Image (cartoon, rainbow, N blue to C red; front, side):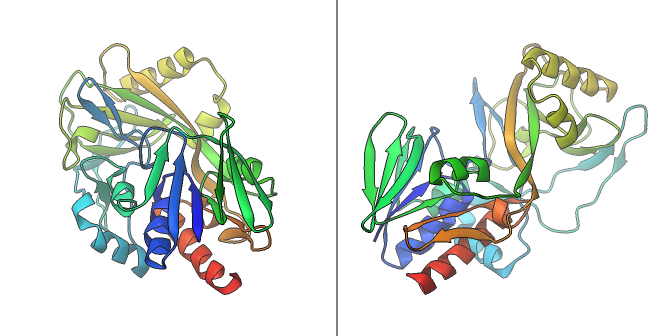
Length: 311
């Protein structure tokens, strides 16, 4: 079958790798210019900012196996981690399991998984229709591609719109990510923050394989991000800079800001995936299982099992 996959994140990466092994032809449609989805790295004037998922863990045998098969694109990250709070003394924080990052950028694992798949970038899908065992993928530029089967790996709300289905109950937390160059050397490479609108700070440049200037990324909490989601960007940026100042951290002028609408899954769907064998359409992603990169792979694997039964 010729299978179209919407999105080039980690779920799509796993689908592409496994479905090709089963003899299917894959074509991936990605609206942005690169691999990874929320495994995102932004490059600015030679500096690298990992402004999406900061790392991932591997707790299931399946995902551990995936990482072992793509070890050239994945590295364990062992930063100095602190817990910070305004006006309080910082203390060391231990990690009790391996934490991994893509190298030389976060999307490297997805790129490796899709190495032999056809991937078309800057192709934003508007909708998918089905007729007589053929699926038509309609794009925002009015073009159309035909496939035997189509799978969406986009966030639940976007998938529901594209596929015209009800993925009732899925809830996400948003997140603002502030991207800056610190003005001083920091005592940590990653930090969990308490009693602040900021909940996570990392020095992206400390990760293996990174090049360029020292970089800092600060993530606002989901609750604060939701409350200020539609606020003017300058107001959000200033509030986050003030929160960093309260922690004794300053960044150079004109930091960047990214707003993630679908950052973390708070409430997953009732099933690990959505599948309609009659119309030859399906969907999967972290929204089918829960938070974390590994959840997206679990969802994709469950969908492949179901497709084998139904098709």
